[in-house]
Length: 307
Image (cartoon, rainbow, N blue to C red):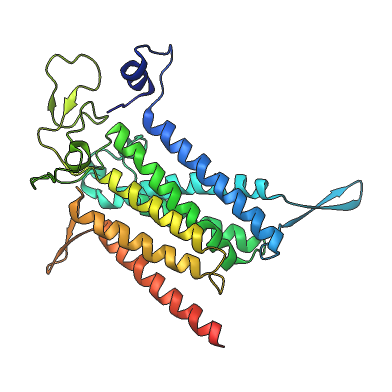
């Protein structure tokens, strides 16, 4: 594992920088940049087609009203700002709800910690904020949802590699199954040495801040999620110009999102709720709801297409 940039530089090239950065933050920033670039290209394409018109801004200058059309790059900056701010807030709120007992012991520590985020909380909060912003700008919402669909799945998939590289605890359960000969060991069961949360047992002879390793190999679920999400991204990008009516790509994204997360929860470490007749995780509940929303949304689109 490479909890910081210097850990990677020391391992790969044998030197360190005078400053240091967390690897999680670097990869997370890269995922935002990559998804923002895709979003910019899609907004630009939709604007050329006339399906998403750029908002018109009116400003008064010396008593006169001057109008200007906002460029796609400006919208990306606005969307990115809303996604980051509300994503952080939503992910923290959902994480606190999922770990209420720990929050009661140390509220301030959990709120201001750089660890402990829920993807679905961030997704829901960011989606609400961006939807309200788009309605205020009087933008075509269904076309906009289609634009965001490949962007969201790509950002999540790349962002999961931040969990894998840093070893932030978002890994799977212990894998006791026999490994097929064609699969590398790190892809089948991994021990996450030097993980950023110092989980596991001390590494003999290791000196420094991150010197723990898991005693047993676990499923490297972040890698699995990255592979699935990148595959879904390629599929969505290949369908984006062919699907009609607008909004259908978003409906398919909801199905993909719900399916991916529900399946990965079966081999992932997570807190579970006891509902009496079954034990489920928060992500299983939300992913099921998202999948059903996708089904209902596609049926609704099919109905309005006929009429």
